[in-house]
Image (cartoon, rainbow, N blue to C red; front, side, top):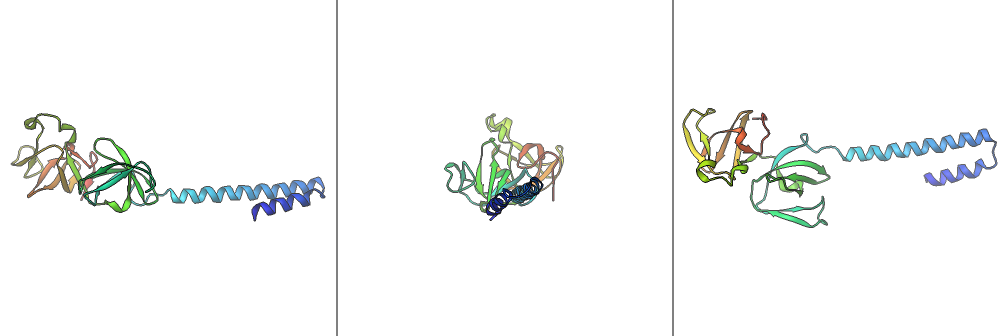
Amino acid sequence: MFWAMVMNTFQHSIDLTSREVARGCHVVLLAVIFLVAVTFGAGAQTAKSSGPPLPRFASLKSSKVNVRRGPGKEYPIAWVFKSLGLPVEIIKEYENWRQVRDSEAAVGWIHAGLLSGRRTAIVAPWAASKAQSEANVALYASRSNGKTILAYVEPGTVIGILQCDGAWCEISVDDFRGWMAQSKLWGIYPNERLK
């Protein structure tokens, strides 16, 4: 429709004076500007985030999740997560797909339906290669290093986050519930508060 209008204006302008030709060109130029504005405006609307600001953490809803090379089922599977509740960091969104990063900095795409807002974390994944006695992380009865130690948790263990105050997180792991230094967890940002 637009191009028919442009051609119609062009054909009529051949028989017109130069002032009328200039007016016809202005009409065409305004129509082009309008189309560009509508096109880019629609694109901006689809780029909106679906939830809280990015980046943000989420967890896997399933014990088997395909991670793809792009945002769609037509993209090949890059790898498969096999851990229910594993935390991932959402860094980008495209329609129903989320680009995620794991604790090893690997990046891929997951369908949004396979992600949960439930907060989990991994205990000190960077310490997994250390000797076991050096790497274990203390779980305390309260928010202080000097208090009763309930258990030691191995690096790489996935835990549930109940709340965080910016320095300490109340967590649950197996049959234990206690406090762990927030700096020992991957799945929550430094100084982030969570209730």
